[in-house]
Every structure is written in C-alpha cells, then in structure tokens.
Amino acid sequence: MQKKIDIPQEYFNKSYSDSIADGFSLFKKTYFKILPIFVLILITFLIISNLVMIDPNWQLLELNLQLTQMLENIDYETASIDELQEIMNFMLPILGFSFLLLSAEIFFSNFPQFLAFGIVGGYLYKTYLKQEVNSAEEFKRSMKIEILLIPLLFALLISLGFLLLFIPALIIYIFFIYSPVMHSIESEEKLMCIKASRRYSKNNLWRIIGLLFINLIITGIVSFIYTLILDLIIPAAEYNAAFHPATRNYLMIIIYTLIYDITNVLLSPLLSCLLITLLVYSKKQMYSRDSRLQYYQRTPQQQIPLPSSTPYEIPRQPVPKPQIQPETTDSESPIFCPYCGFSMERHFNFRFCPSCGEKIPKTGM
Image (cartoon, rainbow, N blue to C red; front, side, top):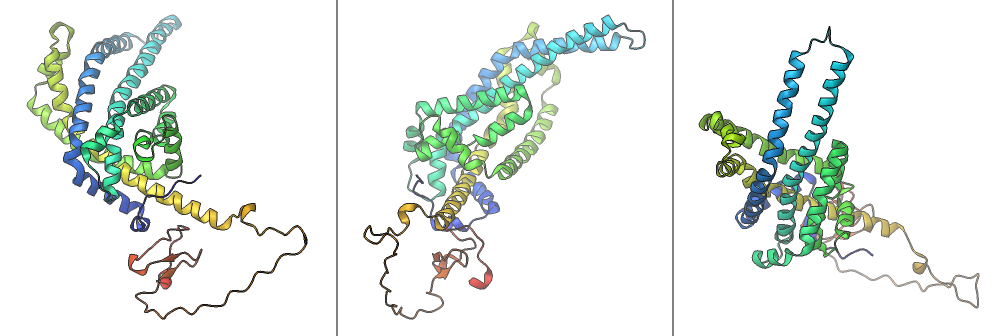
C-alpha cells in the first residue's frame, strides 16, 4: 500500500542540482544545532579506534619493514624457487592482515557517521520540508535501539563487503545509505529500514555517487591543506615517538588524533544534509512514477460490473450535462499536463508534472 506523500507541491519542481544546492543551504541553516551530536560521537569513536588499533597497526608496519628488507636483499637472477616461495609465504599473511585492519578502520569510521546521521536525520528532514520541529525533542525521540542496531549492521556489512572486494562494499553503501534515518522519518521497523532505503536509492545510483564525490572533494581539499600546515608545525620525530612502543604516550596520541582529524569532524554534517535533500528528491520521483502507473493501470474492482440478469449487455450510463464554467483570466486559470491531464495551479510555475513526472513544455505554460 502506498504511503501518503508528505512532500509539499513546491518541492516537485526541484531538479537534482536544486537538491544539491538545498543541501548546502540546509547545512548552513542547521550546522550549529547538529554539530554537537557529530562532535560527541565522532571524537569518542576516534579515541576508541586509535587506542584499539595502535598495536595492530604497529605490528603491520614492522612486518612491512621486514618484507621490504627481504625484497632488497634477494637476487632475483640467482634466487632459488624455495627462496621465492619463502617470500611469497611471508607476503600473503601480511596482505590478509592488511585487509583485515583496513576493514576494521572502515567500520570505526562509518559506524559513528551513520549513528549521528540516524539521530539528526529526522530533524533535518522536517527542517528541510519547513515543518515545525524542536531539535532537542527530535534528537531525544530518535535515540532508540533501532538507531544503534541499524548503523551497526550497516557498518558491519560494508566492512565484510570490503573484505570480498571494493565493489560489494560500494553497492551495500549506496543501496542502504538511508537505512539509519528510515525509522525516524517513516517509522519503519528494524530490518524494514534497509528495505525502505533500497527502495529510494536503487533508481538514484549515479546521483548518490555524484553526491558522495562532491562531499569527498570538499572534505579532501580542506583536510589536505590543513594537514600540510600541521606537518610544518608538528615535528615528525615527536609525532612518531608518541606511537613507538618504547616511547608510547597515549595522551599525546589522543591529542594528535584530535588535531589531525578535526576538519573531518567539523565537515561531517555536510554529507547528512546532502543525503536528506536527495532523499526528498528520490521520494518525489517515486511518487510521480507511482501516480503515473496508477493512472494507466486499472484493477478489476475499478471496471464496470455487469448485471446478473443481462450478462452480455453493458448498462448505459446517463450522459451528464455540460456545466458552464465561469470565465477566468490567464493568470487564474490552471495548467493541465499534456501527458496525463493533471491540473496544476499556475502561480507554482511547475517545470515537471507532480503526477507523471514528465517535463512540461514551455508552450503549455
């Protein structure tokens, strides 16, 4: 059963580029209200991930140094098959260990982002649609068990997909990217959030990829410039000494982590705002497509039933008398879609039909 559409008519006239521009406007409008949620969650998981991953990362660094020395000392012209086999046996576990650690880092980077997105998603959605909403009450309403379980499952699926190869992780990321907010926006139950997310994202694959690319370019450029400045200020010897097992300082590790990752934390709400405006665009597309299908498809219940006494005769319907409509000026008369006949108010200045989604030609305006 199709759910009632909650999008005002003015949003049906927006294109993909309009939704991206609205995402930046929403980011500017709600930044200081949603930023504390992202800062609290992301910084907490940054500290946890660095403390958990510091020893495995150091072990991987030492193994890579040993492998580099073995490759430099071997003479490939005179090396025996046993020596080459020994290097291969040493290289394969390092490769598997590297993929495992990278998958763990992907989990620690994605889970807090999805968790924060699930908490603020309902507030961003209602704010974008110009509905009355209280940020504190909306955040409190979103903090349920589903907000924790769905991002956790989502991050685990992406990590497992990356172990297989990069493409499965990307497909999982795009298809289920809206699952953390479906509970607060459409009141979906647990695993049904994943199904609802796929319903809105499957027809917008390249649009979501383009949105992710825009966010990556912006955050990447800002982080790159910021990191170059930090490298000139913080000596490399002091930074490396904080991670070395002999001189390890956990307090300095936390400080360095916060300093180097602060730009990613401050820009993290941007992706959530862009996703919310694209979600409204996707819902508008789906509603227009469903309305068009309902116009052309008739169910048996909608057909005129035949009376039992005359099974082969169609009853005649009385012809209604034409009603004389009062004359209206061009500025007051409605616009009719040339494809489905949907009536629209002229002052909205539609470019796309809200019913069938077709572009309205300029001659029909």
